[in-house]
Length: 432
Image (cartoon, rainbow, N blue to C red; front, side, top):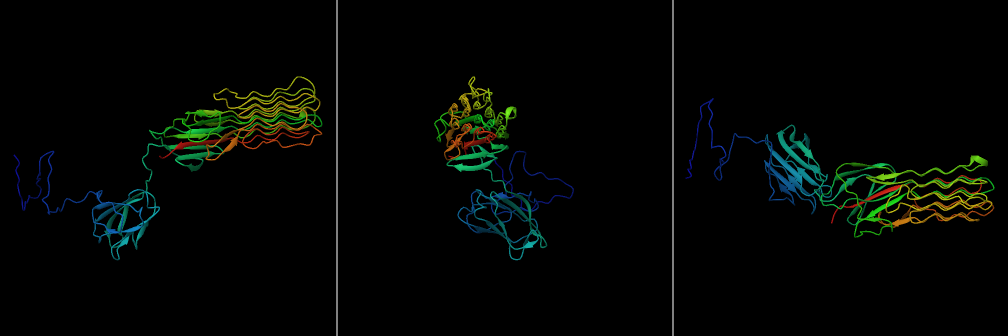
């Protein structure tokens, strides 16, 4: 049985307590009735059933979601009375495209100044309370959180570009890939990690040429089925899972070239430096071997091996071993042999897709081919092996040696060139 009691006026003696209703029950005001004396709690009643898309006049005690996607408009504040409160919120992150103007009533002020204010920040929200005629409406709370909820990855770091539904982060130097949303439904982060190339070997005056530096290790993943054209050695479906945290990025620099000079003063090149992302590590390219009168050392091991240096007759000067340390798919190939006839020519450095060319008398020998990938949004070749130097007395040529990789060995009596720097490119889906 439900009982209804109507009370017109109820007076309670000073110092007494009156309890209305029972625990767990609701006290309702009759239709058309109003309350006084209970006060507000500093909050507003949000008008979720009436999203504002055009100029309107706010009501004390209400909050409004304002959608300016169709163009800028104005929120007219009500006449101020002490304690009046109004809240405004960017409905769907469009205030930066089309501003919302907040206009006080008549000559009333906002934050002590006459005139309107404009909300122009994506995701901005504002709560205003009317204080008095001196200050007018005072902003007591303001925020601009605009990050949307998503099942995709969101991240910062490096140079960010967009290709279709993918974000691409490119690092040409050390940095941090910071994941702000790990995307519970995401496919992970695909990668291209290329290490620094090895330096070319130095050469002895009048005799021989140094070996070319090996390309830095080349490691790549691609979605399965492929969402872009990757290199032939990309690992399908090997995107790395990520969580909300910072991932340090290492981009390896190229190794310095060897020095040219007489006798023992000429030197090998230097191994390139490692590049890393997450648990993916690419080894620096192996150094190019120096040239010498009798025998020359082999090229250095690395992501791709360096070419062996040229020398006079003797045992062939083998190229360095690529894919060192071993990974699958292989991150690079071996360097070429240095030739041993008088005034021998060094071998080319190994590349991402093939070995360096063995040295034979004459021109410098090309390094191994690099890998072409569209992970950056356009086709680019990375990790080409460095060319060896040219035999003394032969007009030098410039074999194809661009891209990120090892660099040339020295021509007669010259220094080897430094290896190219590495690169890290990360790509992931951020929308459908």
